[in-house]
Length: 310
Ligand code: ATP
Ligand code: MG
Image 1: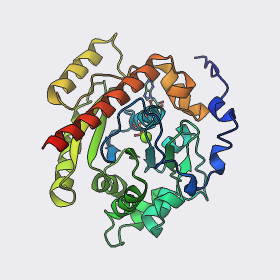
Image 2: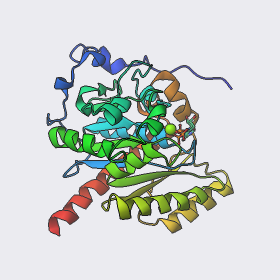
Image 3: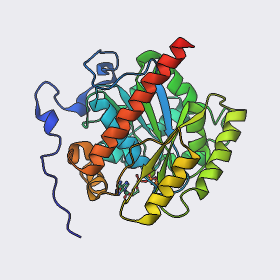
Image 4: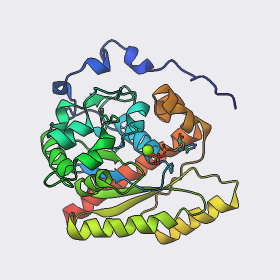
C-alpha cells in the first residue's frame, strides 16, 4: 500500500501570526469563555460524553478526535480527556504525551486541577486536550486502594466545568471495563458507543449495556446511552449493511444518521498528528465526521429546548 503524503503543509492554520505557537499558551489563555462566531449550535450547558466500547479497535479514539475537532471548527469549546494509556487521542490531536508530561494520570492520582495540565490542540481553536501518558497504565492498580477511586475524574471535571463551561467534553476510553473506564462512566452524563460494522459487533455491546446499568444504578443515575455511531462502514459489503440495519433496529433513536465510511484518509491522519478534518477535509471520512458532529450538536440544542419547555 502506498501512503500519499498530506495534501497541505501541517498546521497551516497556525502559521498565521496572531495565533503564535499554540503550545506556548498558558491555561489562563483558555478561550473557553470568549464568545465567538459559531456555525454549530451550542448546548445550553456542558455535554460530557464518554466514548466507550470495551471491544478494541472499533473507532473510539478516531471518533473522539474527529467529532471534537469538527465541533471546535464549528465554533464550540471542546475538551478531550485522553483516558487511554496508549495516548492515541493525544497523538492524533498533535499533543506530546511522552513520559514526564503531566496529564490524566496526575488528575486521577494527585488531584491536579484539569486546567493546569490541558494543552491547546493545534487542530482547531477552542480545542483542548488532557494528555495521557503510559503512566496511566499503572493508575488502574494504583487507584485500587484510594478512597472514592471511581469518582476522581468526576470531581476534577465538575470543578473544571463550573469554571470554564466548555460546550463539549469527550472522554476517550481504553478497550476495557476497568477502573479508568469506570471513572469515565461516573464522570459523564452521556455515552457514545462507536460500533464497527462487522460480525460480532453487537455481542460486546450487551456486556457494555450491563455495565452501564450497574454504574447507573450504583454511582451515576444521570448516565444515558445517548448516541451510537456506525464506524468503518463499507457500503459494498452486505455484512456491513446488515450490521448497520441491526444496530439501527436496536438503537433507533440513538444511532446517528451519518455513518463513518471505511476510509484510508481516516486511518492515515493520526500518523501526521492530525484529525482527518485538517488532513483531508474533502475526504468522505472527514465529511461523514462533520455530518455526525452537526447531528450531535443539533440534538444537543434540541435537548435544551425540550428541557426549557419542560
Ligand atoms: P482501542 O480500543 O485500541 O483504543 P479504538 O476503538 O480507539 O481502539 P481506533 O484507534 O479509533 O479504535 O481505530 C482502530 C484502527 O482503525 C486505527 O488504526 C484507525 O486509524 C482505524 N480506523 C478507525 N476508523 C476508521 C475508518 N473510518 N476508516 C479506516 N480506518 C479507520
Ligand atoms: Mg482508542
